[in-house]
Amino acid sequence: MESMPYTTVYPAQGATRLVTLVLHGGREIGPGPTSAWQPAVLRMLPFAWAVRNAGARRGVEVWRVRYRVRGWNGPAASPVADVEQVLEQVRLAHGIDVPVVMVGHSMGARTALRAAGHPNVRGVAALAPWLPKGEPVEQLRNRRLLLAHGTDDRTTSPRATHHYAGRAREVTRDVEVVDVPGENHALVRDPGYWHELSAEFVLSFLPGSPSGR
Image 1 (cartoon, one colour):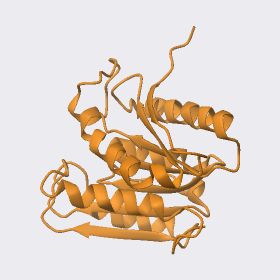
Image 2 (cartoon, one colour):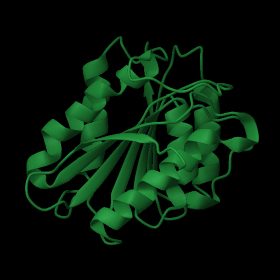
Image 3 (cartoon, rainbow, N blue to C red):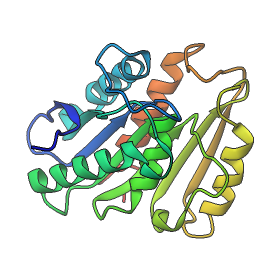
Image 4 (cartoon, helix red, strand yellow):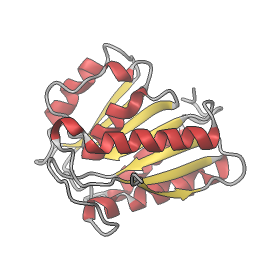
């Protein structure tokens, strides 16, 4: 039997109105399995908690995903298949009408953007995204994007994020880019800022919110 990506679900209180997938980073090459204790995985715990704490009473359910293997692994794009599988699980659980917003860091941001063509997905918050030249954007049509990058990031490129945003605007007009002065790739100089930024973006998709769709 094929293994499944590991998910931790923080349920909404009452009816689920929105689902958030929280996606961790990884390595360029890494065929070995992930573990719950890897720093990239642990980094996203407070993001999941922040969205849960802000949104559970308003119908937001959070799915924290752990990929089967650590790396992107070239053309295999290993975490993308995992996230697409989880998105189908969400669809089976809640139907086509419940929107999904994804929050990803680094490789997780790249994964979220790649998987954004799924019909349930409405938006992506890409934090310090890893965006090599030539990343596709067609799957982002009519999605809402938040791309946030620290100016002192030496692991992934803020300049590449701006370039990607320009290309994304060819298929969707709703692209916001946030430059975070002095922040590095780990997002630890002002973690509360990142948690709040992500939670506010997610909640903006709820019906009745100022930016809700």
